[in-house]
Length: 262
Image (cartoon, rainbow, N blue to C red; front, side):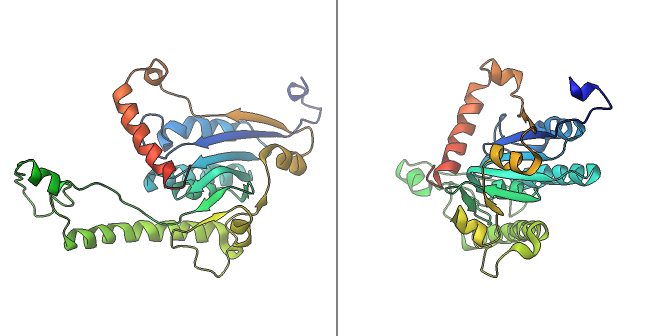
């Protein structure tokens, strides 16, 4: 009741936004469009702070950038501190999201880092040959069949792919440096390595080992009110529609988690 009585001191309020899963993959993946209303709602609550609970193997660099930029814009407009709490994993785009916070807290067993870029696919040229299948491709533009999985991999395709990855990797590095500043160690942190818990803290990739409830209570008092917020699932997903699309997205997401042994 006291929050409705203007002359009584209000208890601190901290919305807790859960960011769990791959980024930009499938209807239930983390994306700026899907999370916009949740993030905006959190900052409209006149909060003392905003907490992000992150458990993600990464995904789309563009969606990672858009989500992080939205969080930073609102945090600066409202002058509200943001805390990120890593559960199992904040890797690649997951760490990009964590860096949107002013402070990053990890579990002693959290996996953190993978500041790099990966493009992965499959190749089937030998299978096609064994089955007597001839690949016929007609393009307008010599790069239109770039990285065709049904043709042998070409050195020029590899070089082209690396040329695409480089500016994305550089943008990721710039984001981490801008957000973590002088907290980063002198070690090479940008070769896609992963660190566990305290090691990530020692390198400046995180600020301490802590869990969301006790840490927020220690920072904002025992009476702090934590308000959980999560991404809404689409109606089609809740009704079990689009099963084929979601099954394919699930396979890809499972592969992302498996890269980190999870």
